[in-house]
Length: 322
Ligand SMILES: CC(C)(COP(=O)(O)OP(=O)(O)OC[C@H]1O[C@@H](n2cnc3c(N)ncnc32)[C@H](O)[C@@H]1OP(=O)(O)O)[C@@H](O)C(=O)NCCC(=O)NCCS
Image (cartoon, rainbow, N blue to C red; front, top):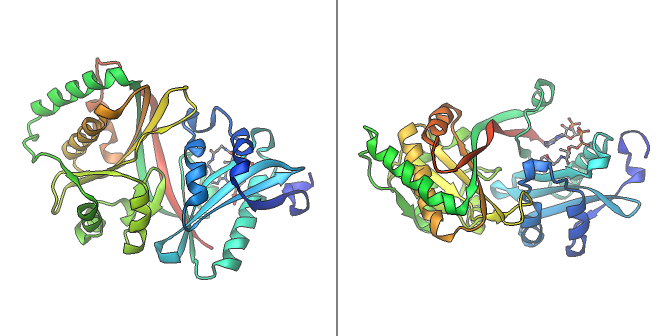
């Protein structure tokens, strides 16, 4: 390969169904600590409106992938799924693919002004300087056998009932209409959403009508502490399979709110809603305001075999102009 993965060595195309195995081949078991989502999302992404999946090939072998999702009514693309084959990392292929994708977007979607992406790898100050930081969430990662979830929930219920300010209203599971109405209110946008951004499992969307269709596709469980002017609102993805273990399921719970007691209650409410349907090995990523992370971590100390999968880590939402 020539220096910096020049385009003469790399062929670009859009992914197709038959590329699935080759796409899996560029994922390493260590990527995302075994919680890689690409196998779970690839087929759905191929069908998704507004989604493009770019792949890079060298000598007919798939060596890299990047995906874009058109959001915010066509003004923004979200970059997702960036990956390079483990043996080809650090050779410039990532940069070459990024330039190809950006050039394609500029040429075919001239109305797109902004690229948005999320990163969980603590980029250096030099990398961060290339972006605007839109929001930051702290992640609490927990794991357990499904059989241990019930006892863990029972422990949390008893802790919550002992807390002085737990005389809150019972959590409300919102239907689609209620959730969509609530998430676009000034109250939720200004007071609860980090950087005025809806974040679902690393997917950052502006709270605008045009993005509701994307939210609908995600099949979320939406729970708030009340239907009007809530202090907390939470979005949970359906569980999906990840390579960590043959029966491992990853579950993502984004909780928007700044009161620790409300966040704890919301976390518990989402677990209670999930409990009847879960089997196998469970890994929960719960994304919260960094200020409440230590308290939620403390709340989750337990004797029920729920383990901390990872220590404190963060998701950064970044933007740059196209
Ligand atoms: C992230 C990954 C694609 C980078 O590939 P690489 O060949 O090692 O890339 P380099 O370190 O040479 O960086 C090249 C470019 O990619 C960018 N990049 C590196 N890590 C990135 C990340 N996690 N997210 C987005 N961009 C990233 C770099 O900033 C750089 O862009 P720049 O030149 O505009 O600054 C590769 O390490 C990989 O496949 N990792 C596993 C999957 C993963 O963690 N993906 C992350 C985001 S979904």
